[in-house]
Amino acid sequence: MTARFRTLADHAATNAGKGGRTAGILFSCSAFGPAIDAVKARVTIPVLRPNEAAFEAALSMGDKLGLVVSFAPSRASLEEELRAMANERHRDVTIRTAVAAGALEALKAGDADRHDLLVADAAARLVGDVDAIVLGQFSLARAHDRVALHTGMPVITTPRSAVEGFRARALGHNT
Image (cartoon, rainbow, N blue to C red; front, side, top):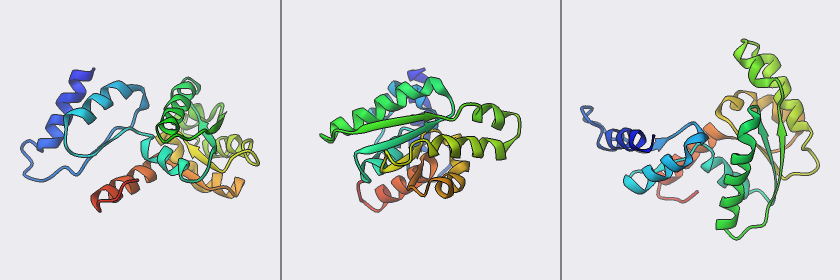
């Protein structure tokens, strides 16, 4: 898998056959962390893991962080990634995670409204114990407005954070 990721990154970084310029690479599945890290070491353009910019944003908001997931098996790896980023910054964080049970299945069945409601309900369980809420998967971003309205909390999505992270890097700022 790592070799495939390296090939993809080489192609993007050299913009083979396009004549343009690739400003950066964003991977959208957190299951491939080691392969993504290998790409980071290989190319000179910015490379972001799916949650990297969102976790950076969350760490800028406090030490009590909420995380919402709709795919329960991703919980442990996302918590580990967030905790590792905090440790790199010498920060002691508390992470509370809520699983939006049934949300992924609702989305797959085409019931986007139910998905968003289940995500908002899961996020509401974190209110009072966290400084910010991270919607930890790309598919959860669509529920941002409902979660923000339902919780009254700052809500961070992975796609929006990634775009903001790339913009900051393009302007020469670290996120």
